[in-house]
Image (tube, rainbow, N blue to C red):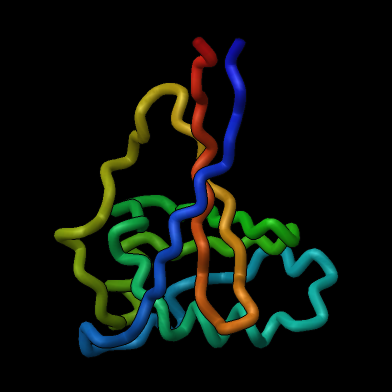
Length: 121
């Protein structure tokens, strides 16, 4: 029997790398969240360059229903903003890849939860 288990991987993103990520994303669905500024604050300080695609937007879905689109590397370049394109992903994710769900913690961190399949022996 295959059992789906969410594995929580806590990633605390910071702007230590020298540049902020302000204006490098779009909130496409606020899902009625009353604390949307909390999402903006954490996204502005986060570095999602390793999640970006070169030519298309990447969708981030939070457990609350909030959906954020990361701008592509090319969109960021057109806006004359900084990003590390050497960390960007190719256009194709592996077949069967399931996008993680993100969760905003009360301390202002982002937890990324990846679904994992474990076979029971």
